[in-house]
Length: 465
Image (cartoon, helix red, strand yellow):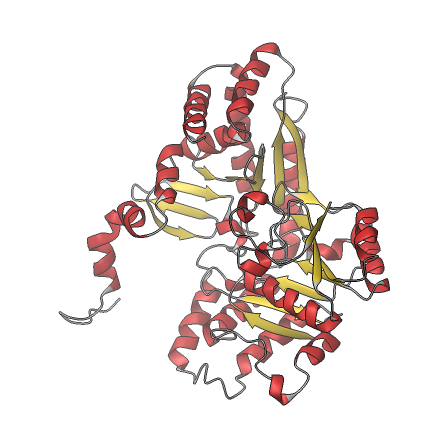
């Protein structure tokens, strides 16, 4: 942050002078609905700094991050190993992105990723999760010579046009047609998969081993049997591990929880960035890459302008090294089991709490219709206005009263999703369970500020119809 002189660029000075305008700048120049939404639910905080699993505001109050930037901050915010790697790569002044040479960092990161993926052979580096999925869709179509890709209801694979075509949520798709001619099947429904494969035009099934929307895991045995069906019909299995991969579920990949599953293509992103430099990767079998890049004439048939850039590659190498040195995957498994067990023990205690599910540090907390008349009438009022309002009523006091950031798992869902940094431990589990218990106590008391806020949300939902 050195002073570049009177006419130079000084980031520190710019932030000091203009940082307080953050919400106004967004409202004026970016997505104007974002600041409006944040003001409405009281999430319009001003965070000054972050480290590990915490934010701090200007008054020095800490906030526990149970969202991890939608999973990007897998090893926590501003990890010193990743920061040093980025300083080092900038100081090295590498001849990066010449487009006509082979730098060492992409090969080294590919090698390190493939060490965790022994049945896969090659990697394509892009810039995001949706780009990783786009790559897999293109490769599957070209390698099989078939046009159609199957996806699962309620899936989320990205928002660019190809990825949106395999997005199972209508709210994201509405108004963006025509999309690619792909077809949804229910997660876990092998009969539906068989019916579609019999048509002979299916290139692949793309699937999240655990869906981010609602935190629903593929049923035991489904991925293995789906893989066998696909291969029998000369189609491919694509595992979207953009959110579930790199230790999130207590194994390096979520598909590894099921023996015998070896996807033909695997998509990763988010946590590989270290929270700094956008990166996505599509891993695949050698024959698929050789078919796509079948001659020197096709050497650039699929590429990305910023793919394999030195900063992203350095961040990815540092992230994987941290995960190995600090045993992040094992910590996610142990801490996730503890958090899920503590929360599941509350299901019998609270009639509004329906189920706790998930794997590792990807946990869904689902709320449901209560049995007592007083609570049931209030629940019905919320559901009539808009499904998902009760979960939002829980998320807000977790932040406002207990300084814990969480998210509702999807539109019109009564599910909170917990995807904290994989570095949290017993202290963070205790803090969350204590806060969640307090919020549930308030919800079941039948009165107070929480239900007052619920009425505000109802008015807002009705006004937006």
